[in-house]
Length: 190
Image (tube, rainbow, N blue to C red):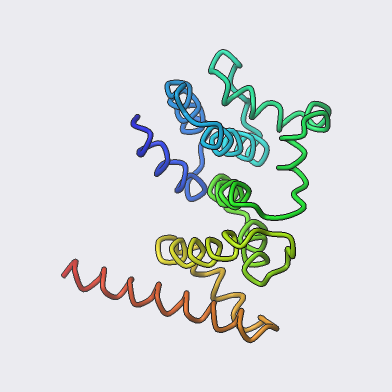
């Protein structure tokens, strides 16, 4: 599978997860040894979160460095000894890298706690987050809200309870954009 296809498959994994698809993705990931360290981290987080949530067996380390990183995250004893793993398990701020890993955690599991972490970054919950995260988090949430009905549903569920008027306005904007895009997509299919 091409790297772009792997990414799309991983992005929609939470909709219909299966161990067979998980193993296929792991096998395909092993065929991309030229991935950057950040891309390896994203893939490793996908494998770790999927294996943890669905209780899938982690593939052999013979699958390569991505599986080795995922196993490090999966094993609490090893994770506590690795600065890299600790930064993922217990982030003190949402960096651009951790924003990507948080999105992958959502796509692997479908758990809304990851969406709430991203909304927290948008609200400015992490005072020590970088300015780039302050710009990227809203953009990525808005874009994914337009593509994923589950993220749109989460935005709709949070808009009325948002205590911050700016957050409520942001969520209403995301909902409106997603529904407008949805209407245009429907019109194009007639």
